[in-house]
Length: 422
Image (cartoon, rainbow, N blue to C red; front, top):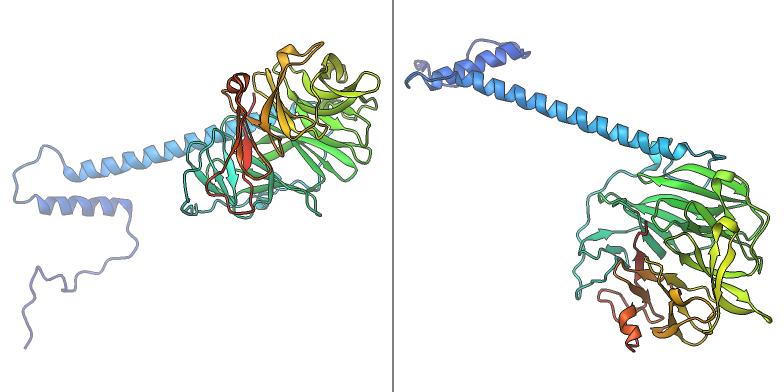
């Protein structure tokens, strides 16, 4: 016995329709649906189907226009940045150690999902960022996974929220330079197998030694661009920047040279009295240790890079260590440097002249000295503790000490991230 089909039964076989449906048919079906739903209601002031269709079309158009605008803005910014760097007259080359080449998209890793940070045993806070194990701990509390990066020797922020540059310790295969993106994607290798790596204070320039050459390049969007190379004697290595010029240490007791990549070749002349360099003042002069007097003794000096690092002012007095460890504050007033003994000295560079004013400033520096914008010097002592040197307190007689950093595993040392200096 067959049952009578019910017009409302959705199992009843209906008329056949083709699978290809046009936009006009979809709109007509939508209108029919709204019409059936409001059949029992009073007349409406507007057609609901038309309203829905118009809203959908407006949404599609807005999304398309927004995507086109963002793509256009990104293209203009990248093109402008590349053009500004490439406008410099230079002798360009392609170093074999450069990875992440803009011409080789496959060299850049794809963004990866963030990994949850492990719980900490206590608060990790410093005035500057810290690298602890495989994590970058920001001074504001944010954390980034650095799995695959390290062991780390030093790190530097890139100006204008451009991420971080991280340099490995020296290994049998050389040094590696990573760029850590600010957007959370995986760290990217920029250099591998370099003999030495130097970074500009703002993180926008990099210099390195590769085989028989010294090279320099700009950093734009996580890529090394406008690379310049020049042959250099064995043992010659870059150690820092003075503006756009690269400070080059000559082998042995050969002193230091200023190399301007825009000029191409490395100058033959060197300032042989220079023993170490500590940083650059806001006016461009280089703070250095020189050999002065007869017999020569380690003294402090301000050097003029425009005249081949000729001393502009020299001051002797405190007994200085010759390990080259130290750093200059962002405002150019203070130098934290090791003395001959087991401690550090805080030097007021404004007094540099016939005599030098220096105060004992706690444990000796064993690594990088990183200054905060407010004038506090931070460094890690031999036991892995964090030392804070506050100039005003040292002048008042305080002897800084080290404090343990929570989250550091036994045998590990935290690495301070230098802040940018523009």
